[in-house]
Length: 501
Picture 1 (spheres, helix red, strand yellow):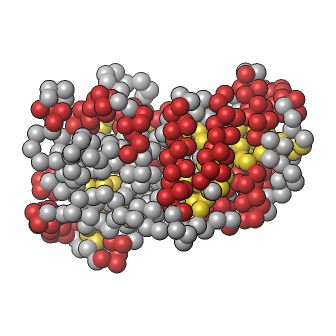
Picture 2: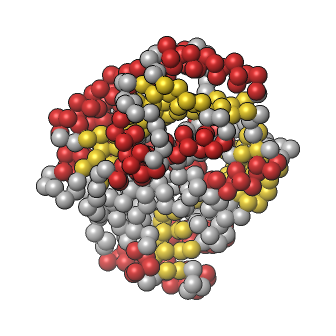
Picture 3: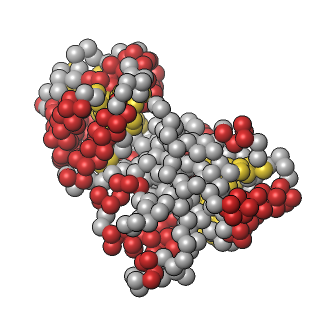
């Protein structure tokens, strides 16, 4: 996809001098090997998983511990320099997009699993620990970490906390916020604080709830205490093939309405099936207009009874073939097609946009039909692969960036899909965050008063708005306001609707 830069304002000379001062100070404290100033090396970090937005960071700090992070943030606070934290860089909304006159704090070297307390079902981990590695480390004790984004083999726990990531099994087990009980944080002023711990439900304001999913705008997480979930006694997986998306959607609603809560219900349409077959030869049934991957887990007796119900409901909704995984190898093959779908569309299209929106599950048939109509009207193909059980859509808008106007048409369809989600009572993001990509869509979902309240919360943590600026909130935020760092009193504060602490 053709690259584009963010709307960061041109740097003022004073900003360059401030960054130079921070760089010199950090080099003296941390050493030159952890402070990267070389342009070619800095370009390594110019984007996250959303490669459409690229900004070369002003300087990169390779943090090894919380003290490094605190020293970096304190230096930034002292000189008024913005900073952005980055984990594995797998985010899909530009949440880790650097600032050209700021510091990018790279957390990927902080990878220690500090403690596994199987009795308490807790683990304490560094933010750079890879999601799947935590499960691998806790499985011998009979536990795993339930949030499982599709990128779980490479994404970091710190990134999961920042974006409140979900995954295929969040239908039953919830998002990252349901699995965090404590955080160590470096505030935007450079203070190191501890919030929560191993115990559930600490007294006072729900600061953990505010921090998880705040996309790095309230500080930098340097350690997370997370819940561990006991491995289920049994897991059963099936693949159900339908002629139409409507039939697959009806089956999904029927399963939930029957009181069955599977660990996962995933749906793929014909175009995404075509891409997966092209890439990984997953062998899904011929002629399927849509497939469901349904997985149940838990006590063997419960799974057995509910599984029979799921098979019956799929067949009653029009499934023309149901395959049940007989062992782990067959289960892996069923999931292989689903897990590879995002990358697989690269086999059938040179460029694509991964969209992320949420709708009520019962609106699936109407919304999916409208998505097809939007794509047809713009001459753009849209592949749908998503978490059907909780209505979390991931339309893949396919296009060829070398064709005149293709990018604009694709972006128009992607934006139209978000409007559809809102029209049906949904949200502009389910698990990818707002980041730089969807900040402009926030006023479609929230009123000016809503956004003002959010800004007031953000300012309570970060009055100078140095922590990951340019994300979540639309810029310019007010009519006539120029992008970039604010000068003088904030209009909301001046109007008496928000207070800067």
